[in-house]
Length: 128
Image 1 (cartoon, one colour):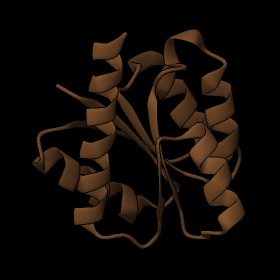
Image 2 (cartoon, rainbow, N blue to C red; image 1 turned 90 degrees about the vertical axis):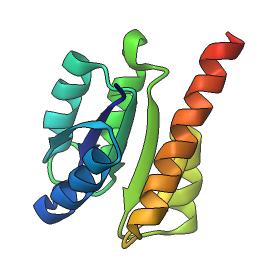
Image 3 (cartoon, helix red, strand yellow; image 1 turned 90 degrees about the horizontal axis):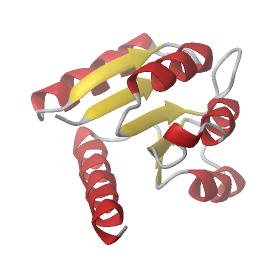
């Protein structure tokens, strides 16, 4: 089963994302901060991380930089979410993550991007 980690400081959004991903057959764990996300990612080694950028404490950016320094997590697929989409942030996200979503987004967009990202992960593993 595919393991997904959702990191966002908004509890309603975490619940909404988790409910819809679980209904689609994914195993989902949530974290309310970058600190919690970092710890969970290290212990669970998720297949995919969905993370907000702007969070108190460790931001999504800082969490991703720290995760990228950990060998086991370097190839983890990431989708960045933000309520403050600016071209500079989208460009930065595309250097670290496989995809980018501006909040608010639809559930169909979320599911489509998750499926696409996981498909890309399978292609990478197959080609290596």
